Image (cartoon, rainbow, N blue to C red):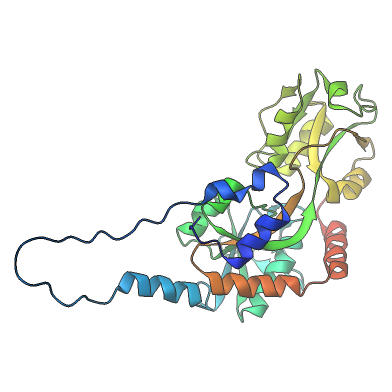
Length: 309
């Protein structure tokens, strides 16, 4: 992260400073100064314009993202209800640019469409592994990430994040007949095999529970759920907002009513863009701020109803 945080990033940090994983103060990198070389010889020439600084200033003030026409939105398209893949277009979908005949739907997609419209662009999805999204953003393969992604220190060092467009939390799910179904404290989970999704906090928070078997994470949420259904694990970590639909689909699942809570588990859903585009980030935040809490909840409920089983 640059030494001077953008207003939007400062806003994010102030909202989530109570969480260890969002303490952005340790992420500030020093900006190197230009070295001025002097020595004997002819008189120095008149200084030339600092085109690098001018380009950086132009980037920061630019109001165009990508090519200004097509907004390439990075996502897994396999993380319902945030995003998922379908085979038919609808009012809710956008095309998946790198998968022939496929479309993306989900909560992230609805917000991405609003951002694209606000920027005067057309959104298309680019389907990528979750762990590759930030690198793909920085190598120019995509223009923005809308993928159920929360800002954390590592990601904030590599990209600029918008304000949150919905907040989720992490809960634990087991089967009704599990010996852990009545657990209320972390101590009650001693000996349990617990599974989360790779490259997300659903996996890393498991380290907060002592004396459990922290299983090798699964790559996607459907695989996490499948492991619990098949009995491969005892407990999974899961999205609080998504629990009602999960239990409707799997009536033998139950949410653990825990008095012990994960530290830093509240997850904002933030869009990410490459660094140095402050004017665009301000525009994106303005678009997000225009989505009312009622509309956010209604979009979530609608996505819960539409998501694949």
